[in-house]
Picture (cartoon, rainbow, N blue to C red):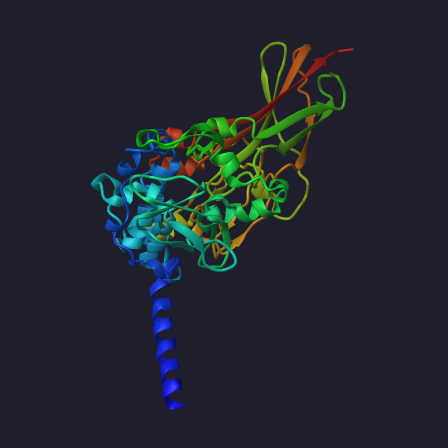
Length: 455
């Protein structure tokens, strides 16, 4: 009996050792567990997957570490803050779990600056995504992906072969949870500072089963590996990853329609306008992701018969925190940049950048532990009102406008435009970003034609 128990004990010990050998550390625990050399370089993948590699190379996925704002935010804000404040110390490594996963997994923290040309520059590389097998836990977030680099690459198609590597058909790569491992994020205060995949789950698109990949990696006829004898398929996933940095994704993502209470208006008299704004394309909130740095706003202007332009301010609704959703030039925010950089009595930067006074801003204000708006998402202790555009839901904004007495009689055109800026312009200028990072992109526009009469 003792001998049998001893044998059973040995068997459990061996089994336990085998299980331990196959357990992969995830999230913060994966730091420094896999050397750079375990991953293929992007250019190796490009030898066979020529067309897909070209698409990927033009995407923000390939520039997740080298992109100008991401570089500035990490090296000039996140790293100094992590070295100064214990509460956020984890972001020094953690940012790279998604922005420079090769460096994170190799333990190369902080990575060298992009100009030094380390493998961190490969960003979310081909082999990173195609080595992910699943995720740990119930919710995908904070790079809790399970990654197994090696000769077997993860894909979604069955019945295909490669002369260079093995292929494992893994439905996880076609799931939204795959995207959620990086596009959902909790900060050190436990706030969901990124929740794009979670937003999708609550959306009409999510309930209908329309996945992230169907919009950001659309399927088209083609050959994913033309230089390796690949087959033609009717539904090859395009590796475009189109998002906020592609105007074609922003254009038409939001619809706006403006109507008036009357077709005729008179100088010196009031008229009421209603603009209906709707997120008609995205299966998540607009803005989403790093919403603390995005600015989406509704701008309404009237042009009279003489060409004079009049800016019209939105009516207030009276909800708590509404002042954070209406542009107020001269209002300062982002004072925590001074804390991070050690600038005494830093007054902050203009909260709304170049957004005209009185325009409605569709935003989720991120607030630090002193209640000040921040663009440092890891420094978010609470949120202001969530006044963003939800999928397939409309918001009405009213404008009560008293026409100037000197307005020219004749045709009057009222134009409502929804604009998108990727970074608050005041922050972008302060951080030395190029204009391309913050110049407004039009998402939607509508015109109303009225007649100014003096009768």
